Image 1 (cartoon, protein in one colour):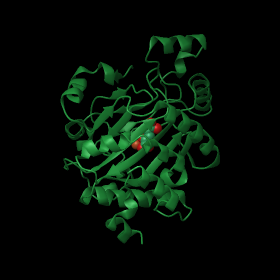
Image 2 (cartoon, rainbow, N blue to C red):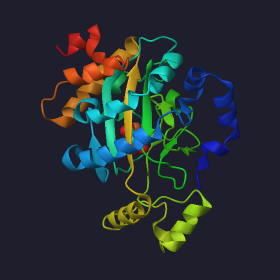
Image 3 (spheres, rainbow, N blue to C red):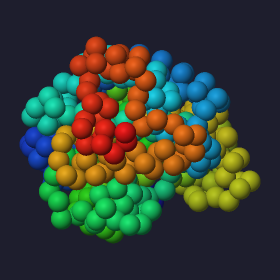
Length: 309
Ligand SMILES: O=C(O)CCC(=O)C(=O)O
Ligand SMILES: [Fe+2]
């Protein structure tokens, strides 16, 4: 089954084009800024991410994930260098008092499955400490920057628009975001989404179909859940053709009950995952670098300092 692409979905595109990012976020649970980031910087970050994944991070979903990445893989701070994310967030929030929560996951070569980022799958009301699907604006949001294009194969982000208002994960029609390097994908942590689902995803474009033919990829591995060792073989085949996928997901917030509770619990989870007694704060040089770019961090927030003293 071929998924619907964002660039083909007239209804969603009309909403994205006619409403403000904030209104779209509230109604649909996501927004996309096309071609907002410097692609050369993203290519450089990808090279660094690939090296980093050989040295650090947690092996998961057939790839490597580095939690607490602003501290553990600080080269990603370069994302903010051109001031674009700051500009987008100032305008989205309508003020300059938003901050990064120190949550960032750097993924290299990882597959994904359907989930929400609100921590509900871990039980106990998740990061919000309660099912928060009645809340219009949680104040806390996710930014995803992919370090390569995802418009040839279904290997990028697939979402379920409007699913941020229900506990259910498979809560409606799936929409594939056919993103290009430089796009900023922005979403509510309650939105149902998945990264690359299949070891060898289906082709979107006819050029990708040609690639599949030229490389004699058997049709029975395309867009399928495979078991090891077939899965590992299919991953290798896809990576040989398309390169290793790498991406960073991080969290921004403004003050408010839901965002503060979320940020604290989300940080606790990152620290548990790391199992190395790591500090929730950033290092002095990282803070200086961010501050010189005008990016505020959770390190200076009283509610955070009270929890992690
Ligand atoms: O790898 C992807 O594209 C998705 C990652 C993701 O959903 C996450 O980090 O929560
Ligand atoms: Fe996620």
